[in-house]
Length: 435
Image (tube, rainbow, N blue to C red; front, side, top):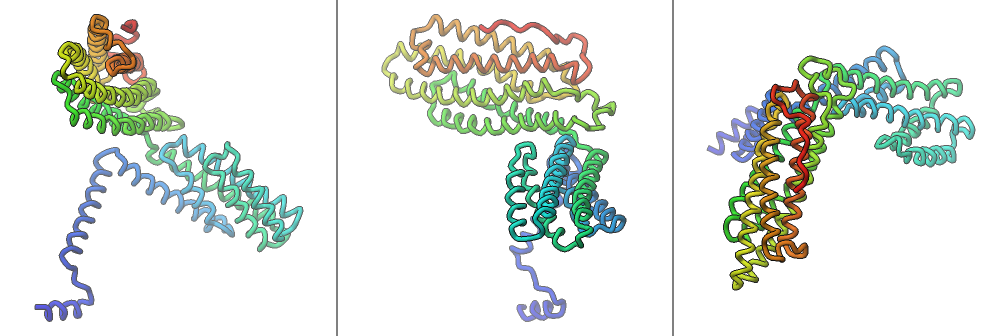
């Protein structure tokens, strides 16, 4: 059998694939098909990557054609290189990246032109050009494009060395013009060909964080009605620590979504006129980020409470105070869980209909917090002692409810900006004073 396989391999000129290699190839194909399917079906990261590659390729091709075939430039690669370098995920970033890139290249070319004219094409001139370009490149206004000052100056020096004396300034000017051409073509392509709007990505990120927050709060509410368990508290700590970076990413996604509206012609279309401002979503993203930190602090305080409860297991009176406080605390977290559950179903199109239930849930959370505060005032002194875990738990509960309530009211007030206000909307309802 081995002989026949060897003979067949010799006739076909191909090496027979073994079992693991065949499985690996099939897995690669499956992943590729899955990636393409996701790019087609959803407006996610895969589609954004595919569009960026497509637009960068088209911009670079157009720049090469104009620089090489039409202009007959001596260094046509500057144009497509610039077009690819400034292709960003939002038009706002592309415009500012283009301005910085053109400014950096112009500065590098000017440094070489002036020093080359004054000192000539010598080694000492090269050192002076490099040093001055590096200094200029550290100017904060150039941002991440500061290194392009040195790159442009070095390329300009090499060009300056090989062209005739009467064409030196023309060659240097051509470099700057090619970069300007590349930036103009790249920005135009990004502006006219599927200009990105990232509001759906931001909304999905907020929903994901709210859903994870809801699940964590729900678990904590259920378990606080029972004696604290060390394993459960440790699990809550791990989950709360993972929630904070996720909330930070959601806030950054909201910032990019608001940024994607700048200079974007799609915002003028009927279907996108509602995305004028992201004030409500920004307030919600900030609140969720703070909530993640507050829940982490709550979990740490519960760990201290669990240790305190275990250490005082023989003191029945003290345990009675702890149990009543933690039961009331669980009800407060449950009310916050209701808010997070509604936020996890956030939909920009239906926002005017969702804000009223959100405000009702915020009012319910405020009532539970008032009950918790009233219980703490009637309970023994250790509950209100800020050095004990129960006082810290109460402080974090007040912050948690306040931030969620503020986010709900910010969404209600931004409703007219995001979509038409539905009948019965309570936009502008004054907030209750903190309990």
